[in-house]
Image 1 (cartoon, one colour):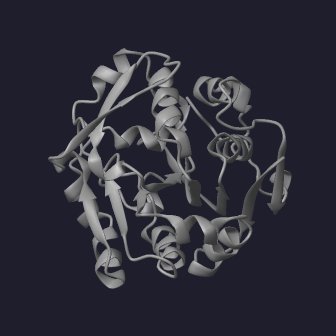
Image 2 (spheres, helix red, strand yellow):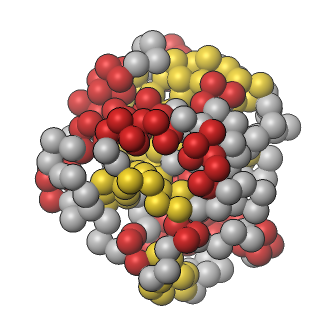
Image 3 (cartoon, one colour):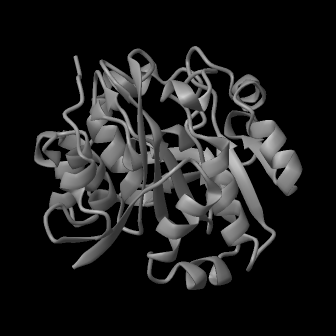
Length: 275
């Protein structure tokens, strides 16, 4: 049975630390990592309290934990169709946090060296081209707790879609974005998912909606299980989310056999307004 940490507490480093402390094997993960990439959500230049982008404080807590074992840590994101990741890096305040902690930000869309990765048992993408920096990296998906008008939710697995460096990502949406998410997570499965729910978003998402102060952090090594807990906190059955269910069917993680440690889901859950 896989474990997922669920912690309710005020927006603070300590709340994130508490969630991370419940994750088994985290010290070993950081100790053995050749490099750590923290993938944030910069779909827009809106700041964390809007419920749309990753809170710099959450990323800082992850950095502080990883720095106990390694200095090869990078915060990463790629350009989106309507958003420049470099601009979002500055507007969201992530730049000040990285400067304070001495961590470099990489815009994956600007990385020159690329590699091709073949995807076994692919849904739609038989291979992808990604920046070479992702090779042999421990990738942490620092996601946001929010719905998505096309994929149902955008949590840890959907956040990994941003590792694709292409700015014009509409082509992937046209190929069935849910299946693309499964393919990306098949070959680039995150080593850790941390979902920032200090401020979440309800409404159509992933940019439009109303912020909700939830004061929760969800964390786990199993991306399917962690996203499943995130779904249930929003009042959504994870079996209804194609990319979550399909990833489970393909053996990428658990949907039902989950031990939630910390808080109980029912004590923090609320029915999120969606579309």
